[in-house]
Amino acid sequence: MNNEEKKIISYDPQTGEPIYEEKTTQPVENTEEPKKKSHVGLIIGIIVGVIVFLTLCGVGVLFLFGSIFATSTKTYNETKVNENKEKTFIGESFEITYKAPWKETTTKLTNGDEEKILSYNNGQIRLLPVGSSDLSKTATVDFSTYTGKVKLYSDFREYWGRTNNISNGTGTFLTLKDGLYYASMDYTRSDTHGKMYIIVSEGNNAVLSFTTAITIDKTVADTEVLNLLKNINISTLYDDELSGILDTMSNWNTYQSARSGDLGKKKTIEGGWRILANSEEYWTFKDGEFYYYKSVNDLNDNYYQGTYKVYTGKTGASKVGIEESKIESIVTKNKGIKESDIYTLILTPKKIISGGVDKSETNLGKEDWNFVWILVDHGKEGIEGQQMNVKTGDTGYFVKIKD
Image (tube, rainbow, N blue to C red):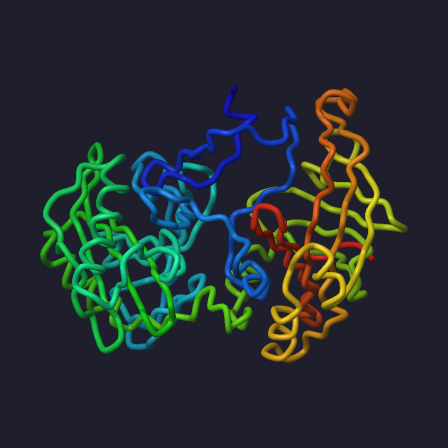
């Protein structure tokens, strides 16, 4: 089985290379059932109990990003800031306040994605958010105990040790500040070195991971990073009682170019939706017929076509096995979101065109696709669609570009 037929379940946190699931997924040569890199948002409220985590040694940790460390590929977009002004770095599920000589910048990862990082003193330290996960699902032993802290540290060390030379380290979790714990370990890979950091908030049910690349003394770098991380503010993750009150503006703002030009204005699922990502994926829904295109710039090739049924609110969610309480919680805790803004779509693919060839007879699966979309009105900036694949838990964020 070649890699095109395997599901990408994560990206190696150092190389950016995809990690593939060993079992086969729905085979299509140039198109595949839509799978998105997970972002925190309203849709997270539905993902609880559905989302699939990368499980290694019993640890569910969703690693989101690739490497910032290949010197031939790193690019910086540093912006001048007022040196005395405190600023905020907005991540997915956290915020960090910082001052110079820390700066927010962007870097192009080895997997092609462009991501935000924090850079200290013109790149002497480069801090990349790696991922986030639910503490209650990540820790296999009660984290509040000494044994639990050691076990979680060991699990991370074992995983990261598969692709890095790991040395030293805290051996357990230490107190960063009231309510927050951290663990760290040194790593080297090729000509790059730095530290891996894990931050745990029991109160927010959250595990965050970061990695650094450094060109200065590691003790000095460690002190600067820990002082920075003391200013972190973490949102609650994947709490069964909390359904999606987390900010998605980081994602919305990152891909402004994808939502430039004419946009859709009707807050309804019918219309055309372009992905907010380093991709060109595009959905259209109209009169019970859908198209899913690999590229918004080529509507004649590489696409799925089929029919769909649409439902709204709790009734729709219950048709695909989602608890009504999750819909109620999203509506209650998010001003401006109504039940009628939450759509359940049951899609039946009928045709696949791949590389100019109709491959429906050989590559078309028999299963329906079940999706939930939550529509968010950003006023003049456009209408956002937060999408979740009910079967896999994969999520995506879209902007409506056509009514």
